Amino acid sequence: MFRSMSVSRSEFFRDYWQKKPLFSDNFEPLAFTIKDLNDILGRQSLKPTDIRVVSKENEISAKDMATPRGSLDSHRLLDFFKSGYTIVIPSINKLNRQINSICRVISKDLGASVQANLYYSPSNSQGFKAHWDNHDVLVYQIHGHKTWSVFDQAHCELPLQTHRCIPHELDLDRAHRHFGMIADKILYIPRGFTHFANTDSSPSIHLTFALEYPKLCDILHRMIDSLTVTNRLLRKALPMYEAHVDVSIVSDLAPILSALASPEQIGRELLHMEAKNTYYSDVFDLYFESREDQAAIDAGTHIRVRESAIFSLQYTGDDLTLVMPQRRIAVARSCHYLLFEILSQKEIFCLSDLKAFHLGTEPLALINHLDQLGLFVRASCRP
Image (cartoon, rainbow, N blue to C red; front, side, top):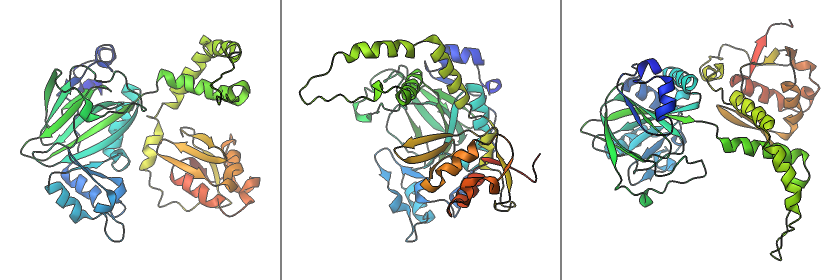
């Protein structure tokens, strides 16, 4: 990626990353056309909830873009576009292989998890009010011309997901610059930097690559979550019905916090987060692997968990969720033990050998769903 930008990687992270905007006019072209966009919008599988239709003052609800059967009404969508609304396709990297490949390159070069969103704007329009994002953004112009206005200083310094941008409260009298974006130009906007964009007399298509990085506070959250599992004191309740707090708890917490902040523990968490954030692995290509020619998994199928697969398990009460970069899967209670049994296997195994596989009727459906998401590698026999 940096071969196509005006700065090196070291210059980017030293001078620009989360500090100030960067404009480059030499990005490698993307072979994505209006025909490709129309093909995506014309897919029967595309639902009204898969897109957004927005203007500076309003956003159209999904039900107003739906046919009586609940599918996307392309004629109504075109009418909204002609009346000045921008069409937004979130996570378009899941729908187009070329865009997904660029996500992989950017993710590897910048060390971030990346999601691409597409914006198709009519002439003489503004899709959103001036606002800032709580993630970094790379803007890539595909078609037409769009003028971006970006403020020189952050309105919110290093915002998190919990910070909310309220457009009407922003001070827009601050200094800002204008960037004219035509095809193959790219613009980096750090999180917290207010920006807005306008088209001229022609329509515009651009991508925004949302760059999400793990934060230092995430390390503390993870360390505390781990401690609550093993430390009874941290699970203790503090009744405050008489506006009274037991001050002795301070002396109990002090040694725990000291251990929490040890360099060794922080180092271990950094290594864990680095591994968890490697979203530029082969898992990106799983969106596009054709599995239509593969028979469904049955009891005699030999599989193993894909080494490059990225996933985690999250408990909320008694509910279990399998979290993957491309999906969150709620796991039926009858399948909890089966999933644990599968994920604990280190080698190729046959499903019929798993004890939990024979309990209930839902396990096979879950396994085939996970296979479609690329969690497994199949083998014709044991090694």
